[in-house]
Image 1: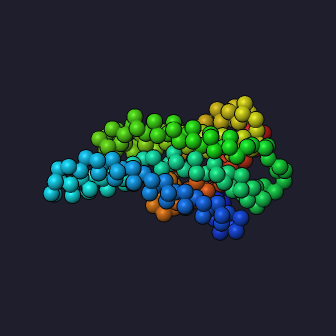
Image 2: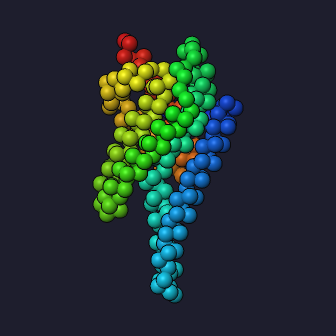
Image 3: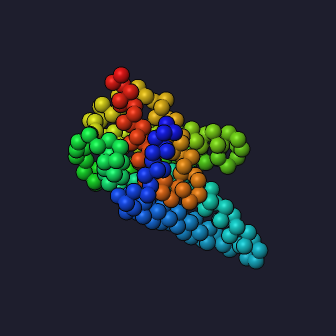
Length: 222
């Protein structure tokens, strides 16, 4: 697994990944900014205390923006990555797996819609778990990385697997290698919570999971 991460980080300077990384950074910053604007707007509607209470509310808003940014960014990363799935995958395959041949055709709109569906599911799950995140120190980290690791592992794996397998084959491989896919997802969730690095997180996650997919499907042939 760590060899896949090393290979991924080592390719970030590849010119073929320049545009996806720029798109990832812009999309990530836009997501964080949008979240901040929404939170500030909602809290502004209730800014009727006056004097220092409104200032306190502003500090609370800042804290909420940070917490929600950490909680919901991993899910948003999948929707962002759907925009450049093919270009990242082609760059990784050209360098590390040149003999694979062309991938299965997958409409861009289909990939984007799947990313948005996953975003909705991730938001719903994290909203339900938000009280645990805020009120149960220690356990909150286990629950956060466990839940998001499962979701991210499943979605990123299927996203790259469907370029080479039909849905039934991709699901069967994921089920057989569920433990490895889960651990890979936890690592992706961890990357998505590291400041600065998480701006390129969607690109890193896509490339990393492609390496893991190729390793796991070749492992099944042994």
